[in-house]
Image (cartoon, rainbow, N blue to C red; front, side):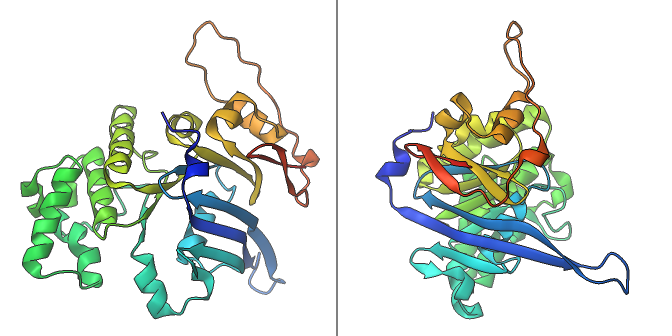
Length: 302
């Protein structure tokens, strides 16, 4: 289980401050453009060695937040501090060098791997892009990474279609680890897999964190997964963080009405336990309500 003391023991690795992303769209060709705020003044920190969960329904802004952190999507405003540098203001060259220490594991292993590339070339691609090591050193690194994620070095010569979904996600994880990153952003890493494979990938991620000292930003709508692996959790609704707390506190005593409704929808594994469904009224949501500390380390909007 996650150590509840971890956030207080480790230094801050990622510091997101007032991150905002607006999208401008036209409903029709000649209509007036409309601005939609997908991420609204989001702030949180991720400490070295912890797993920080970002949860919410589809469309709550979780994935857009992660893409803005990496500047795969340019934020409208705000700051993203990583190892003492504000990524939002970094020029392209320094950003590229810094971003090698922040890697992303995508949701769908069926579309995130190039079907025309062999597994070994997929894993080695970050090494080639950043000119890390000789060709022989890269081949050796690929073999080590395949073994690290539970695959055979001989699998390097195979194409993605020759692997199962779980094996493809292992390849995606190996690619993310190629440059020895400090931070791994896992965006719904098991959502596209069968239930029988999900636990295997989750256990792999937990094991890799313990062995390599990784820090995870886990984006998920699977609250049972988040409860199992995360040290702290932030709940997003309509682009805003409405509650943020240690996982034990958030799941044991949720404070915000939206969090309560979200948790009440999780099926219970106890056949004898009754579940009272909480219904959240969107009209009660105040997007201007600031986060306030309701208990030590437990922040709630309102």
